[in-house]
Length: 459
Ligand SMILES: [Zn+2]
Image (tube, rainbow, N blue to C red; front, side, top):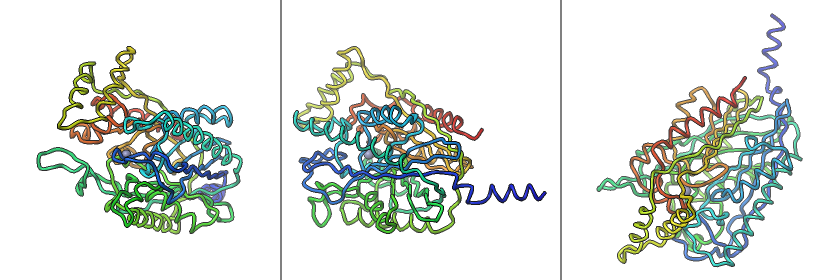
């Protein structure tokens, strides 16, 4: 009996969690000025300055058995495979990190640089501009690999703990008009998830070393309605960058890492100015600080991971689909250069005998014993996925990261696909994808989620 009691005490003790090692790194990834900014089709010129530096931050963790993972967050719109694929390849070669053991996240700030050829239908670059974008992406790839290496070199004993907060500024943006169409607006009765999951990393003496936190909401607070409308053309991390800055100021020496969750159909409310981005960032940082000080649960190992790349099918299309689209895009009453560009890309693919019918899609799970499970989904994932994942895994402490590893387009659920609107349809034009997904998209993603969660489950 005494022996059993002793064993229970040891297992229940926070000291058990010091079996982790943790390392951090932080590298500046602010683009040069001027630079093309990404996220809004309406910007007419390049950046004119920097309001806030952008960062890549890395957290390396190793459990008692030596299993290592690295989580990278970036103050960027999203990672194009032109960046993430070479990062995965180099991390495997240089650091022996499996794809499943590396998670690349972003904040989805709309006040950052163009990344690779992500959203390339939005732009019509000159040869020189294209070269500068690709140069920045090459530098970004180097910086992310360096951050991963630096974090792995920084490993030292650490305690992990987790908790959950909530902030209310995210609002569903799929507004139904009187005529029944879905437009980008505000939908106070639409689905939201205001949870703020927090992972706290401390050294054995209790010093805070890293905070990983997330929120399901677009980083689209800044536009032209602030005190200085030209802020729209200045580099900034939006509310997420503000929250990271506040937390790092409050906890000198610690690294504050934000990742967007499944917030593809969520906007900050109210929005429109730098001042509001600062306000939302401060609210988020204050909530994370509150969580850090109250009721955290210890996170224990082992770390288990799994990753699957599935293929998601687009709805059927023919060459005629895009020939018609070119004609429609030239309607003198409503010319649409984006539609024309996408149609030309698709006809090119037909000409090469390789029409685009599917997209590869990464689904990853990183699980810490029975204490925390990160599900990481590629693309701009709508909040339904996060809400359904919580319903499907009711006993799990879940952090459902979206926009992870590769942002190829929006990922609607069957509901969103059925309703239509920007996330289901027109966004696919900007991403250079052939059109809406087939109806199977949600079930395919959930099959993969169940599979990686099982593979990374306790044995
Ligand atoms: Zn977006």
